[in-house]
Image 1 (cartoon, helix red, strand yellow):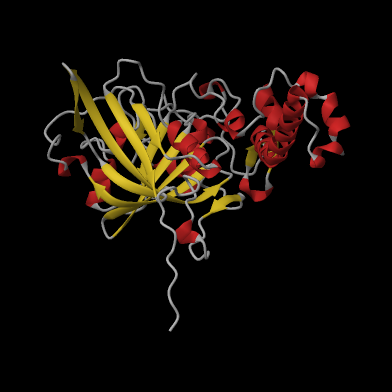
Image 2: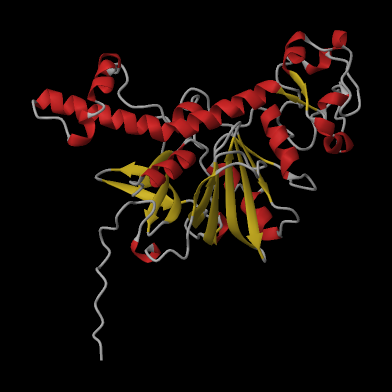
Length: 383
């Protein structure tokens, strides 16, 4: 049965195909048809009105009528999405202030517990901070971005969509496509789609309508994959990575003729100690569901000089030792931008941008904190 016309974007309406009693649009072959948020069953709403024209009130479901609004000539949007986005941005802006207040309270509690005098910078606000100490016992840590962005992590498995840039080369398709099982098998519960002529806005709307948690877009330069974008839904963040030294699974001789395990993998994160490193680690960590204890699959993200090396292994326990076999693919990645929004929101605030031309760039490790193995610069003698 074909869904009502208003539930299908114009581009998807052109690509609709019938298979037997009916099939989903080609954009998401394994996902449900698009339906606006708040409508339990799109097939019960017989609406077919041009963009920007509000249908009669008696034809709009109660929940949709409650959230309806007009956005100029662009057609209707949902007030709830706008409200949730506004609340997310406000909570993100208050995160740094809440962290600072929490740390000041912790300093005050430590001083009272040890019997020492209060620090000078706390004496002025000690009276106001002391009023809330009794109510802070139940909160071990202040609220963070994880509470807002990844509140369902560990409870609901992520649902990921992987696609490419427009007009991808054969190597980029091999890096993502279902037949060779490269990136699709790296991320469990992921679906690969052909980009075609879909613009970013259409991809983002389809992801929201199908309850997709993350969208991964891979880019290339002259046939070599060189960039990856990870966008978390429904409100962000979006992290931009560069890719280098990409080796496909079939380029790795140890495992090219074997099948790939689809167990949920264990994750290893090495040297993500700074606040920015923890932020990037969380974005990568929540792309994977919670594994079982007996899983024999391991994925490693090792940071060295702000380059994240990705490796994919399986292991087998034998008497007195463990045998490792690399599965692939393998590549190096480096973050260069984080935005507080989804991929189509160009107006979203930039949370962090890599500064290539800062004077301290070579001496600074942004993901792992201060570099412990860096040698001090030698002084050059003047002639």
